[in-house]
Image (tube, rainbow, N blue to C red; front, side, top):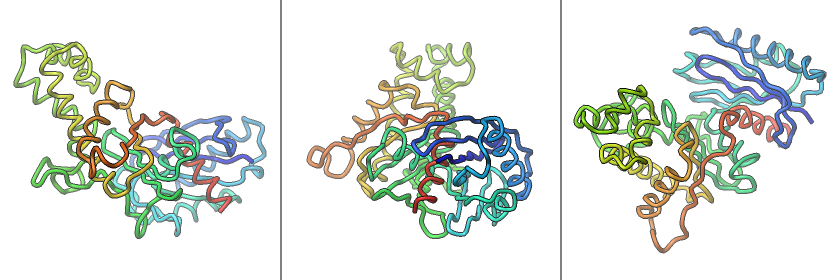
Length: 318
């Protein structure tokens, strides 16, 4: 069977065709304008799917289902994007609009939730039924799979782990609250934390790399690996923030594995092992309950697409 996956982003939309075991056959993307309407999104996305199907020699009628992962609050049961500040849509009936252009079933879900399902079906958590995925990017996206099913909550507004508060009256968050996990553990937060230490320690290797290489999340890791005290401080504090937020999720769901995605996960064992060590020292029953496994997510740049494909496969076979 052939399925289509759609990964909706703030600036572009990616589309693919894939087999039910997660092998991507073809993919493409298109740039979206700032204020795209639901109808425009559906028409352009359906056109992209039809175009890649034709290019791959696949009859569009042979596409069994389409899965879509979009940012924000998504009511999968109603097929509606309830609210997304990233793509500026509210109460958008995306499934209804998509079906004006395609005859197959269409399923939609939050992109982080879908990515977690994708990892459980095709990636680092394949075969496991309880998974927490945390994506450290511009924000902190979380996806939770429990007993093999995505946790979405009432109206699709659940599983927003990036907005659990880890510090009362802490740093302001884009959601309007203060002290959110996202405000401390996102890649954006890491840049802010690095800049603050650079300002205090202008003679450090961290400051020199920051000036030479530009403002990048790689800089504090490079400085820390070189033994620079300023870089080590940034990474130590950042790891503590990541572990603290993860501990709250682990204490509730106690998953088989915690997966870390996003660009920071490319630091590999250097970062993952530090987070694992700290996390396993602060979770409930530390040293008594089984250790929590922490791994880097595997699907990388295709996480959104394969998460959407997983939505389509699960939906079509439900």
